[in-house]
Length: 203
Image (cartoon, rainbow, N blue to C red):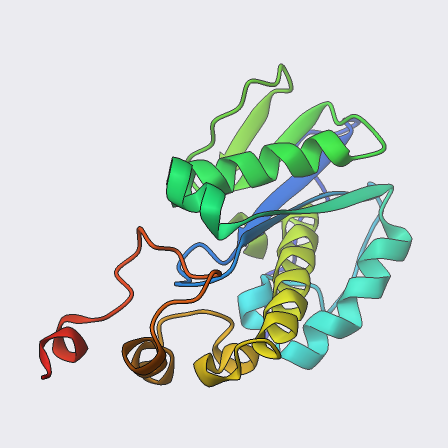
C-alpha cells in the first residue's frame, strides 16, 4: 500500500519546528512532547505518523531523526502536573517546553492537532493529522512516543502488576484489573477515571 508522501515544510525558507505529544489518553505516567527542526531537504521513505509504524520501525527511525535534525528536544510533564492543570493544558505545556529547549529558535511551529495555546511570540499553525502529513511532525511523534515508551518500561520494573511495558499506561483490561486489585500508584493520574464502571460495580 502506498502511503502519502510527507511534506518537507509548510512555509518555504522558514525555520520550522514540528511538535507532537504522546500519552494523552493514558491512565498513568507523564505526557511526553517533542519538537523537531529538520533540514528543508530531509527525506525518509519510512518516516510516518508513529501510530502507523511498528515499534521496531519507531526505534529504527529515532537515531536517524536525532542525527539529521537541525535541532530536537523531548520534554515530559508528569502525572502530578497533569492532575493540576488537566491533560489538554499539560500537552500544551509539554510542547511549549520542548520548543523552548530547542538549540535553534524556530520561526514557525507546526502543531499536530486542532488546538494549541502558547505565550510565545512564535507563530504557529495547527495541523489535523499533521503527523501523517509533515516530516517534522512525524519526526516529533516518533521521538515523543519512543521516549515515553522507554520511561513506561522503566517504571514497569517498579510496579510490574500493571503491565506498563506492554500497555504503556493506556486503559487496557489488565491495567484496570491491576488498579482494582492493587490500587493506584504514585504514577497514576488521579483526575482520570481509573476504573471502568463494570469493574467499579463488581463486589
